[in-house]
Length: 202
Image 1: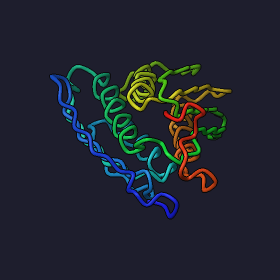
Image 2 (image 1 turned 180 degrees about the vertical axis):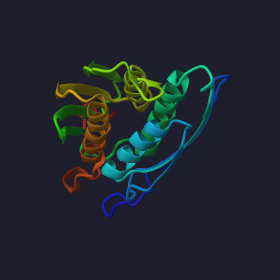
Image 3 (image 1 turned 60 degrees about the vertical axis):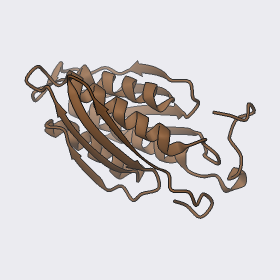
């Protein structure tokens, strides 16, 4: 919680399907503590980056059908985290709403812009040179960002400005999302009691 917004911005979500069993918790006013277990080492590392660099506390546990592939696990974790993010924001009162990040990682540069608008939309203009990273198909990361944007109710533009290393491009995307979210969810003391929309609702 913040001084301007004393209500704890936290949420728990459970998602159960024939493909995945997920529990997720977020605290938007945390310190970046992350406890994640999905059975996918690289994906766990990306969720750690998301929490650490946004200062959002994240707990995420998933039992998925990894004997098939990583798709359902990664996509459904995006749905669950986005849902928790959405619930934790409440009526969006006082938030900055918009966030922008240019995130460099060695040779790669990723740009992300977010609008906590209530209108889910994803632009994914990301080039991944390698189709696989370890045991994962790299195309599943687009599905994570799409699921997150849909369930969180945010407009999200993700673009690779340049880069040649697939690991760096994906990691810079998660870190850029973290920085953009950190900016967008921050409470603006000048409008702490207002919803940041001329419509009066988000």
